[in-house]
Length: 84
Image (tube, rainbow, N blue to C red; front, side):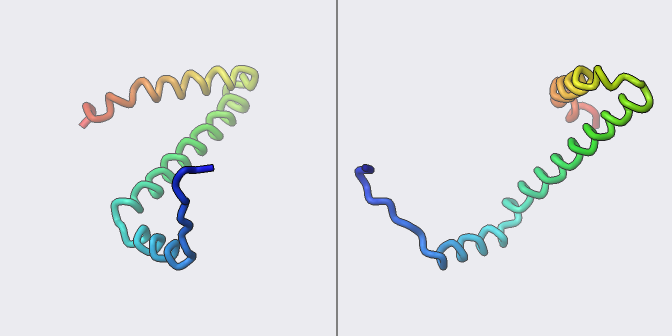
């Protein structure tokens, strides 16, 4: 049992909060950016698989190739601001 009574929000309060979030420009950039980033990573991973399978004819080592690609991307991320 909690020591403090938990107050539940009404449906109208949820609607008001949701409208406030939709009008907030900086907040909306976060899910849009996340969706773009996720889409790019997904397409890149899928295309890498087909490249390994059909061009390199090395389907068995795809997991290793993908791991190396992801680690190298994470390690090179701090260099992006320097490439202006």
